[in-house]
Each structure stands twice: as structure tokens, then as C-alpha cells.
Image 1 (cartoon, rainbow, N blue to C red):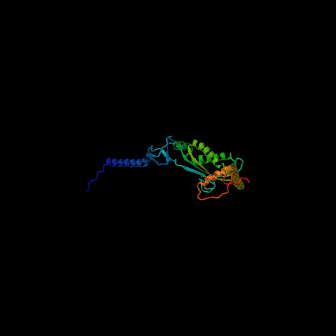
Image 2 (cartoon, rainbow, N blue to C red):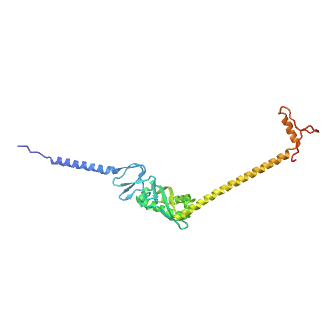
Length: 288
């Protein structure tokens, strides 16, 4: 007969317990270690929250050890842009998304705008706590619309369309900078890219600008001709004064002097009429 097999239940129980401890340890390592060590990439910041409470200190780029029970939310701090345009699909919205604003005289104009900004890293936790991740739609877009309507209302349509466009853009940038800074967002630049006026008004302004350019052209020509006339008058007066001085200075004695002075450099004999009483050349009196 075969010998009976002795089974040591205690050893089996110990091995079974050890296996489950190892399995549990492995499970904890796999689950919690990735949450224990957190890497924040360049251009990002991390917002740490534990049981719904957001920590005030942000996690900058690099490696961090955190409580694995907490949650780290990554937020972009690179330069970003928000565009509102009449061209479909150019901005955040798929359809036409230009801004309609009323001018000083009550005319409605459409504007395309691009805002360059980035999230202030030191304000990321506050933004996450008070606004969330949708701060573009909840903060940036409303502030753009509000600010541009506030500024455009200070100008007439023709001014925004032409000579005061840059001035309006600067006012818009300054106004929006103050509003966004309060909300934890840093404004980099505002690009007022296009101004669309009502068709009839745009045509009228274009015709007026063209007429002004023609007028300036004619004024330039007139000014040029006037200066040329003055130059010729001054030149003629100078020639007349010079001739008068020459005529007054050409006396007989002066002509005698020039004649004698010129003879020393001449070779040969020169025959000229002479005055019998003086022996000097005879010159015709000036003015006769």
C-alpha cells in the first residue's frame, strides 16, 4: 500500500498568506506609486487638491512627491490665443463669431479680434478654485466682448476704420489688461484685425478718404510751384542787383586798370583806339 501523504496546513496557510501580502503590496505599488511621484512638464503648472480642498501652492515644472490620495490637475501657462472672427472656423466657434459693437453715433460695426494671453502660474490655484478649467469661455470671452463694446462706443465709425484705429486698439488693450489681471490672467497683446462697416458707410468713407488724398496731392503741387516761383523771383532779384552793382562800378578809370593789368600777360602788339591827350585807350562811356 502507498504511504499516506502528510499535509502541513500551517505551512500552506503561511504560503497562502505570504502570496496575498505580496499581491497586495504589488497592487499598492502599481496603483499608488504613479500618484506618489508626479511630473509637471514645461509650460504647465499643477494644482493639487485633496478631498475637494485645493492647495494654494502650485506645482511648478519638475518632479514632485505628493499624497497619492490627492488629485493633480495640470493647467497650461504657455502663450495662448483667443480669436473672434467673421471667418467661419477661424476662432473658437465654428460659425461667424465677430463682435458687433455700436459706435458713438449709434452705428453697428463688426470687428475681428485676437487676444494673446497666458495663465498666471501663481494664480492658477485660485483660477481653478473659483472658475475651473473653462476660464476661456467664462472669463476671457465675456471680458473681450464687454471691453471692446465699451471702447468702440467712444469713437465714430470713420475714426475706428481709419486714423484712430491704433488709438482705440491701445485703449482696448489697457482696459482688457486690467480686467484680466484681476482674474489671474496675463494679457500679452490685443490685435484688432478687421473692422467691417455697413456697405454704404464704408463706400462713403472710402470716397472721402480718396478726396482728402487728392486734395493733399494738389496742395503739395501748389506749394511746390509757389516755392519754385519764389526761388525764381529771388534769383532774378539777385541777378538785377548784381548787374546794377557791375554797371555802377564800371568807370573809365577802372576799365583802364583792367586793360593795363591784362597787357602784361599778352604777347605781341595790340592796336586799340587811344586818347591823344592821355595816350590811353578810348572807351565808350557807359549808358551811351
